[in-house]
View 1 (cartoon, rainbow, N blue to C red):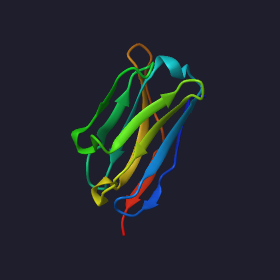
View 2: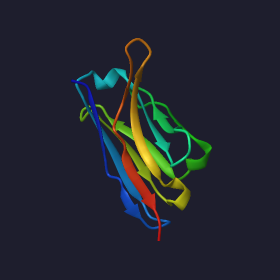
View 3: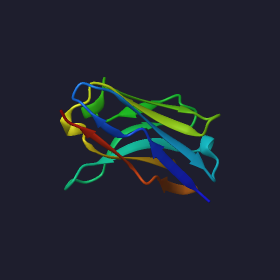
View 4: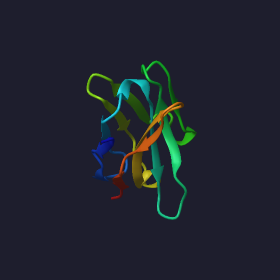
Length: 117
């Protein structure tokens, strides 16, 4: 059974930090590119950051460059999103996604991040 389980969300003050984790099971994690998306109320889901299978290349949305860092540990089947200097506009449900061009995509259930004083 394929599962992607996100954790680490919560309530944080502006300027604070959170570290999201997404742990995979039921598929070969190391052959999937991984990414984080987010969806705020009333808005479309948008790409936040992505990392390729071996972790050798990453990409970021302009609105998080310099503040967020994506990383992965293939030995632990986990991808991370370190979020620093959080802003109220970062408030959203954050989802992880596993992508393989032959085998398709998997999504996690999401974790809520709320940035508010």
